Image 1: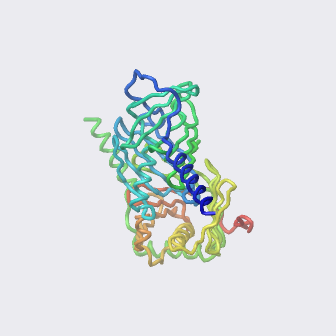
Image 2: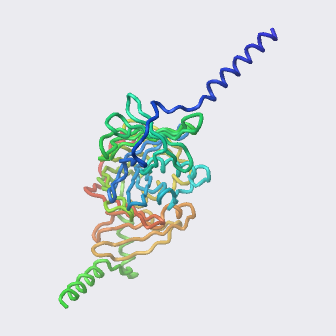
Image 3: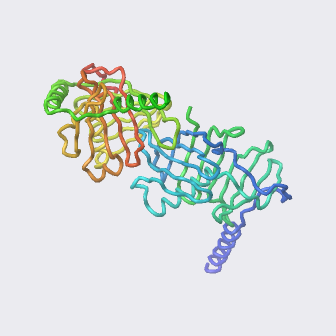
Length: 206
Length: 207
């Protein structure tokens, strides 16, 4: 009986180790890139005001509101989340790689929440990435970059349109953002955190 | 020289338009009496509204439209029809949300929700004037009487620094509500096609 349990435990630990500790692998074959940087087309026209209806699911609590993004100049972007009634829930300014809190409502003003919100919204609107590696696959290309020291994978389809952005650790995916649109316009955006139960669906406001 | 004269005249006209003068004691008493009388007999309000959110960093305000229903028992429905279909009903200490068909309920027992409901329904009906939670001042502003409410309550102060209610001079009910946030950004709600004491189908307040 003990021998059976021992075999079961060893097998379980082995399976756990081989599956959980698998390195996150970028799809495709590594190729040389002639470019040093890549630019995300969304939220990147200076002066344009981007308005999205936002459905946010946080720890199974749903709330809806309006997300506003504006690229003020080459270095600065502003992002605000409002309730349907119009009151400001948060207001961030991104300057290069820094995120400054202009305002955040008291209920959200907790150190961990602010840190996560800064990270998530920076991932959503950051536009300029250094290309570390490029992989080519039958579905398009994958570019590996870094933001705030974290590994970022930008997936382009065969038309060189950015369709998703992931933040991954050595082992697993942490955040995934899917973009649905054409050219410089994303009609809808789906954001999913795999480290916290947070999902955000954005639909361009008509 | 001519351009300086034009500039001066323009600025002078604007300063006249924007001028706010405090109501005299007589004017204030007459205004309060008028609103009080109207409020006493007020059973219901049904109105369309246009909402405009102003943020300093945006060139264009964010617009929404909808309908608002208020009954004297305190039931309030705020129904957005454009660009989103979204409604919130404040009723019997509950907040009922219908987000494009997806329904949810929030307990209205929380202090903050009570204050929001009180503020919205009180602003629309003009019942806030004797409220101890606000520091209230009265002005003439163009063709309106402007009532400025500054919250005394610490919690409310974090979200709203000032509420401005605009009453057309001959009207006893509010035509515009401006909710100013501590940053200076504001939401302006303008009521149009306002109907008082009309029969409101009770099912309007059903979830």
